[in-house]
View 1: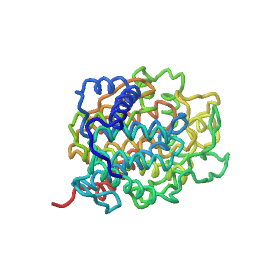
View 2: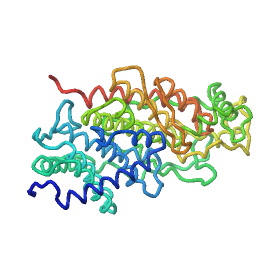
View 3: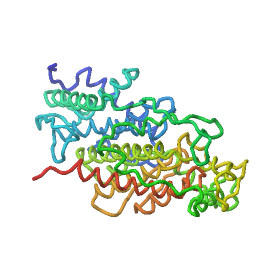
View 4: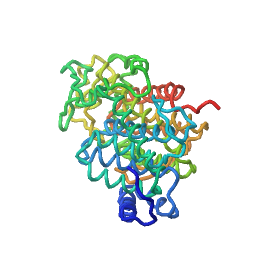
Length: 433
């Protein structure tokens, strides 16, 4: 629909006001260190701010009730960021689109295209958020001059979103995937305190976004119950991961609590702003990280479903049944943090951590990580300068929290790195010439 250009149309005044209110609301959701950085920036938004704004809104829309697990939420971030990426590079070029050949005139607004792609993807999956999405869309378009460029951007963003939605039909989201109940030694079963079922097993069968099949990255089996490696794993988590552990230090406890609810989207926004990334590279950063993270989740859950190993709390309480003379049962043992409702091997958190650090270093072309990330639960921000340090802390954290064995953590890290390397060798590549 053509609009008569005007410097101060009622729509523009309303949308500008909405934008200011929307930005204030977004800032309130960002952890304090990131929010302070946002307030210090001059009035002109960062070149890729539309990507960061919609990533933050995605988190609010898809999990408004706080019921999703981080692996589930990752799926929606992947869809939205892939749609925005295609909308931007389909206009600006520089990188290969994600599984698409759509193109738009260079005169189209990439900001309008990105915002519209995100809006339409979210609207398709979450129609109950229509009013909020419409408001956010108006806020994004307030930064774009009225006219043919905006209109062309909106039209192309709709095409980009429609492609993502069509490509994900029948992908297995939320499909029932059974896990056979068993009380055999070594086999996962629901854990205290709530004894919840393995409800996220569908992630193991979700169609990947980048890799061809998760089995390609499925590691070998965990250590046998009667092995010395198994005993070492169990005795370590028993000692250091206990709720009232006398050997875990305060620093180790802080690290265990830090890696519980991380603001990854805020960390990516911070990274893009500090590196001065433009809109195209910001879109690529978010799309690459979020799609690789989701495929890493799929690989981890594939292993969980395939091997189905019991969690430390079950293994420690029932150590008299594992046939290993090096372990001893403690029927009253409790972990520092509540055990998630899925098997031990692989650790989903360390698999995605390995995927994250390898993706960031491959995209930057530097072995340095430079990741400033905030734990929403701990209300703490840490700055990691190396991938090894981040991966090490994540492995330690899940062990010291009492919810994973070290083997499940270290093997998960390696699998995540492999997923990222394989995926980025085939996706998000610079265009020739």
